[in-house]
Image 1 (cartoon, rainbow, N blue to C red):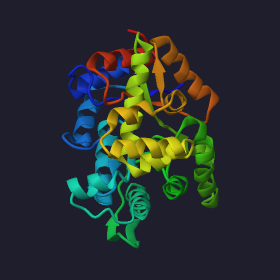
Image 2 (image 1 turned 120 degrees about the vertical axis):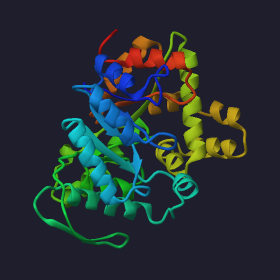
Image 3 (image 1 turned 90 degrees about the horizontal axis):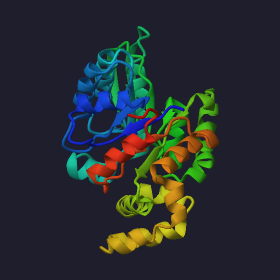
Image 4 (image 1 turned 180 degrees about the vertical axis):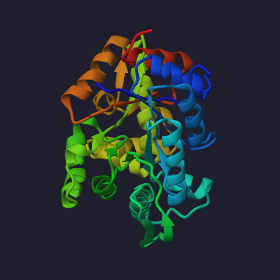
Length: 327
């Protein structure tokens, strides 16, 4: 089983220390988020220089704050710095981030994702052709392609965004789609792939798997409840993803969260939702469940995500408990 990791911090470690630690624990790939505070490309360059084998990726960078050309240059540089270990993971992010942080209009996000990914594909093709593109949102006039063989994953949640994955991408990074609904959700990806003459089996399914391990299993599960409540209450796309299997519960949680009743919203996250949206419990249970998830579902590579409410000690325990190798 290939097991990946996302963690925003690990015992105060610097990026290079985090990467070498993850590599020593046997994680197959280390993904970095990018929202505010740190530039993922710079951090990944540090990680690439400090490691030999572990894959490195962005999960995710948004398709608004960097142009397709800049995304392509970033991918080209990180592919070279990592000796071919880099994967570019993109997503549309949220209206809050794009408009209130980056000052861009959150206009037609699915179309923006499609045209950006299509252009990055052309820019990194290395086929000797010059790139010319006349889209509905983006235009490029006569620039040479780079030689960068970089896999491209996309975090498409809604059906239209999942079709972008099927048409153009090497991998899918679902977030907050219940495990029980992943296979049905992937059918949209598969149909779009077939329409383009692509084999759906070539699309890697790499979901975020919120994970919490503790000798106090109920504490671990409570951390996951808080994580789920935050996402359901904070983003419409995330709420809609959860609602594909838990429509009534998601609506109640979102309403409570929006009125400021955060503890009440957390309490509305059922045991069934915890088990269908993440992995939580004692270390042995967490290891078993992660392996079952990869063996019994369409998941190709689970991405272990440490929930934000977790303490530093729980983060450490979870990273160690989930790791393919023991210390």
